[in-house]
Length: 577
Image (tube, rainbow, N blue to C red; front, side, top):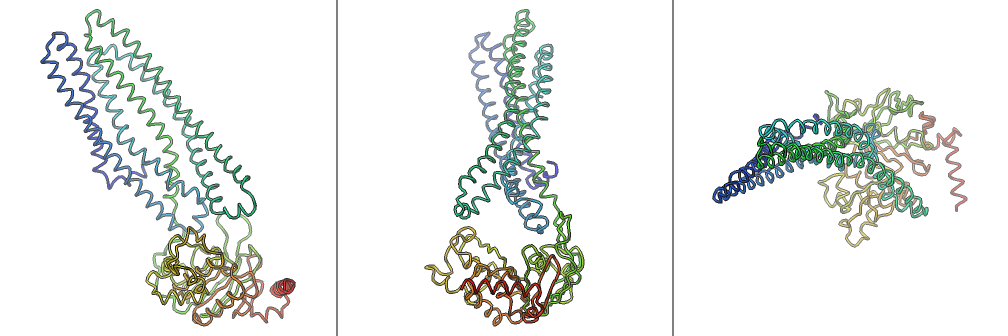
């Protein structure tokens, strides 16, 4: 938790005012029993109604001061906690945004969502409780103990014995509850994973009639979370009955011994009543402190999970001598490039890749699933970093180029088109927030998206659901292509991004790219030979290595992998026809 205290620093004034206000509340509560004792021993004993009224007014003033202190403490504690949580959430989100793909591979999406929401909410509650309960309980215990000792030191021996027993119980319960609460947060991660998968893939679930199976999977995760949560809270709820037994036992002993002292004249009735009030306050404060410590035990698990994000260093950052303004032509050179995923213990995903792509050239990449095609192009904008060799653009190693500048000059269209809630125009302007209507329309014409967009009632103002659920796969891909074209990048990468587009539309897109983006270096990953057969150069990737390269005609004449793929696909198309 100490690592997170820096997020409270900007709100130090509020964090100080909260305990000060709690001092006022506790002081008032400690004074009230003393006033009551005076009323009993002096006012009631002597029948002095004026004294009773005067002390009664004083008691009301003390109660009002206590109320002001309590309200003020709650206000400043809550304000500090809310700002504290908001700042951590912003810091975590910014850190996640800076993560490379390697960093993101370490955390499940559902786990990051839980950490940004539930875990931080738990920490906010702890800050509020600490600024109130963690101040109130020790103050009340110290103040009440001092007042109790002043009234009758001998009776306080019973209190000390009760405190020792209660502290022992609290320590045991905390040691048992901490690992359980860690499992609770992991259970929340699991249930979020199941929910996220089902909600995002609901169409697939329905298509395969998997509703019952998915209900069973959710029920299992839900039951696991319920069971571990019950176990965790059952452990900490043992605190209350144990504390109650100790409290009542102590009260009985104090009443028995106190009654004896009253009978022999060592204490007055008012003193005993006052003493009982202080003992109740002390023991109730200890119970409150024990519950707070239980909450802190749970917060420790949340703190570890939050710190795990904040302590993760982004492994892809700008070098100290990073440069900008160096991408002028778009010439890409792979020099003996090798890449392995950090957690991988097998063969490299890519091995000894040497390739030169000239400015304005269109290069097609073909290969079986898992050959390393996507990984190869992800190395260019440094979504991953090479583990061996180098990649240069216009003679400059990509690791020496500013990340922002590098990625602004490289456009990537992914196979899985991801759109965001909002209008079509808003999604398109992700490519260029200042794009004019004419620029947007031109990009859509090139991407073959203009016709279906204009057929909508609201045209470019059509609102999209989350992920673009109200569009077909092909429509989403074409909008994604148009969005990337608006960046006007020097290098354009298509990662099998026309897989959901019909052959006629795909041909129009290829023609549009050739006409309007003649000076842009284009890399096209495809599963279909027809998508890349007109490329200036075709690269065939097999088992992480370049198996063949050349033009369509050159590769056909070699009768190798490319030729075999071409013949297979051509025969399949013929059979379909």
